[in-house]
Image (tube, rainbow, N blue to C red):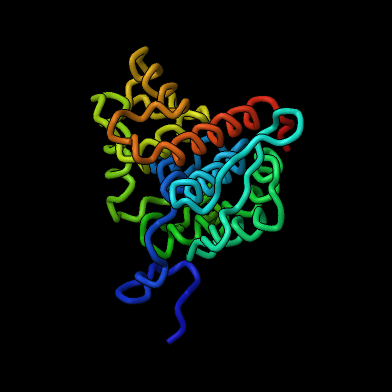
Length: 240
């Protein structure tokens, strides 16, 4: 029996997808179940690309260095390719030669939304539904898949930003990217947009993740560099 492309996977089929990437988690958080929209769509490809690079940094697959004129470049760590297909594609791209962070963001970002969304649908985190438009036409909409995973991710980020919990590196990167995307104010019902939250979010963007993240110093520094380049790209560079 053939499976529909948007039908959730089960059992061993779901396991073959592997653990969710940081970019999947970020896209799931940015999904707004109440409206079926993705927060920050205008600059989404910069944000998702930043999450891919941050994931590679956390896995010690890439590092950054300083190029001509003080620009920050990304280079692949030799013989450390990731197993995930999406991460591997980016690793292959930067393994050809070190490239500027902004160059990588612009090169890989535009192609990420669709495959990442399809993964979330196959995992059952999001589903495609239909609604009547103008009472006449059926339109495809995104709906909550009922897996509960978005709620858990949001709780982890809230604990760090509101309660001051020391984050695991992955949660710290996720919160930093969410802040860097400029979408945090849209989460005010779950994460109050207060001065302490803003201050904590900025600390995470800068790589100040807490004493427990000392062992992740390199990945923390690389991730902070990537997040700050995402912010620059999202606020300064032309948007299509």
